[in-house]
Length: 145
Image (cartoon, rainbow, N blue to C red; front, top):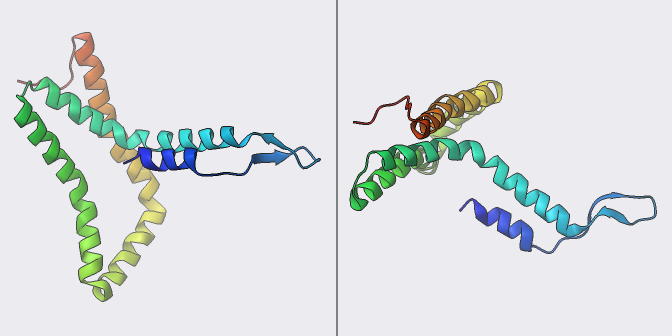
């Protein structure tokens, strides 16, 4: 799903990007502009992928059989999507009652959102990544029995 915007950016017809050199010619060919936007789209998705890769690592280390591993991964995805689905459901089912609440949440997120997202991604994502590296080196942080 994440690759769709990047692929669309590569394939979408595009005029030349970049600054003009004064004579109206572009200094950066259009295909380079498309590739740089694709790289930006992919880079933006990296922080969200770190906890996901950590969860996959823990599932693999648990040495589950294939159906149990697939069930664990599906459960992880459901837990990941549940808050988003709940917000959409509240907005659709209670549009007038939820307006004030969503405005308060938006105000809170403007002030604290960036800090919280960084903290939420770095702490569990960093822990799981460090554990994966430690496991690879023979010194895991989180033991799996």
